[in-house]
Length: 391
Image 1: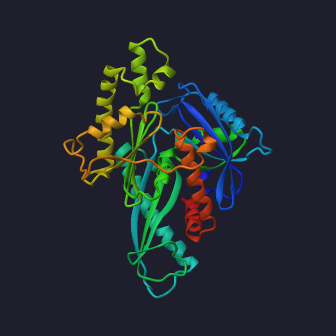
Image 2 (image 1 turned 120 degrees about the vertical axis):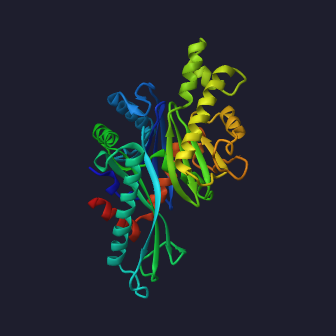
Image 3 (image 1 turned 90 degrees about the vertical axis):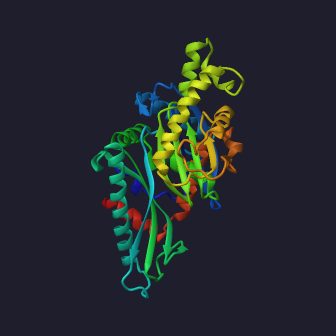
C-alpha cells in the first residue's frame, strides 16, 4: 500500500491530527474553490498511548481516532470514507533539494515525454542525495524508510521563475523538490489505522510540513513546535524548507518535573504555566531546552545564516518559553543570526469552527490539503506521482 500515490480530489474528506495529548478531527467539503470546515471533534487521550513519539497502544489510539471522527460527523448526513492524517512521528526526514537539468534542444518546446524524462532524472538524483543524508545522520538504509510526500516547490527556466514546464523552451531547468521520509515501522502503523477505521488514507501530512503553509508570505522563518515530549524545529529559507530537526524535550518534561515537587494536577499546571510560579523547575527545563534548541538549529543550518523571524507553536508555546528564546545569545552560541529574534504570528481562518487558535496543526493541514486539491491535474504533479509509483 502506498499512500503517496493517491491524488487528493475535490470531495468531502476527513482531516485527522493525532497528537500525544489530543486527537482532533475535521470534516471538510470543497466548495467554491475553498475548503469549508463542516464538522469538528476532539478526543483527549492517555499520554501513555504515544510516548516519546512511539505508539504504545495502537488499539486504544484507534478507538480515540474513531471517537473524534464521530464527534466531527455528528449532525452531518455523511460519513467520510477518505481521510488525511498526521501523527506525531518520532522521526521524520524532510528536506528540499535543488537540482539543475540542461536541455540539448533549447528551442524546442517541452512536450509530455520530455517533461516525464526531466522529472524522472531530477527526482531520482534528489532522492538519492536525501537518502544518503539520512543514512549519514541516522543510520537508516533505503529499505528502512518510506517516502510519504514528494512535492515540487520551485521551478526555474534559465533562472526565471515559472509555474509550468509543458510548452516552454530554454536551456537550464532548475527544480526544487521536497521529499519526506519516515521509518517503515511507523508507516506500518498507519496501515493498521486505515484497516481499523475502514477508511482510506489518501495522504499523510506531517505537521512539520503542513505548519509552514501558515506562512506562505514569510520566505525566511524558524518554526519551533513544542510538543509533549519532543519539539520540532523547521527552518524555511527563500521559501523552501531546508531542514527539520526533532529534539528530545517538550512541555511534558516540565509538567512531569513540577508534579514530582508539587501536589498539583496536570491540568492546573498547564493552565497556570505562565504565572510567576514553579521558577526552579522552569529554569532547569529552559536550560536543557536551550542546549537542545542550539543543537537542532546547528544540525539544519550548518554554517548558514539563521532567519530572525521565529514562530513558536504547540502545547508548549507559552509566554515564558518565548521570553527565554528572545534573550538567548545565539551569536555567542555559534548560530549566525543578523537581526534580533522577531516573533511572528500567522493570519488564520477557520477558527470560528475549531474553538481555539491553539489547534494550529489541523488548520495548517486544511490549508495544505487545499493546495494539493488546487494542483489537481497539473502535468508536473502527475509526472511526479507516476514516477513515485515506480520508486
